[in-house]
Length: 203
Image 1 (tube, rainbow, N blue to C red):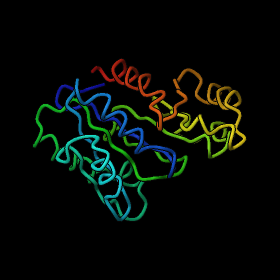
Image 2 (image 1 turned 120 degrees about the vertical axis):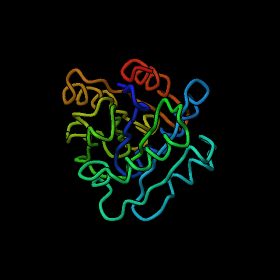
Image 3 (image 1 turned 90 degrees about the horizontal axis):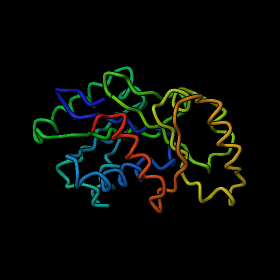
């Protein structure tokens, strides 16, 4: 829920190659005309994801900040989120009317979670290409995130993944928590994710 003293902070996590940056790009482009949007990206030793979003023209460059986490990227979103909180504070200073900030984590494992001090809403992205068994493997990202995005559904036939099995397993593992299948390359599923953020984020 968006707080009275700052923008809605949306944490986007998931393994390397799942489609986090593609999702961040699509959300920025879908929401930037109606909301004041910014992004903080996390990479271990570079600001590659931030630079990629600039190349994609997701937002003006002054609205995109890349932080270098060093070591384990999950530390910067969970145990010690200071570097991200400072980046958000800097954005808020420069752009006082911010409505939403997307915080894209570095590629991590299924155990990665966002500190509640950092993210108001969490989205966890997995890829069909990682295997149809991924939803049933569990982990906090899959079971506890506010929204699970199962990306690259278009590639299911090519990697031998059964979407019905993934749907069943995700339903069982998440119980009442929502999830959506997506194809970020074509923008399929973005509308549902934006609707979720509007409904649950108070936008």
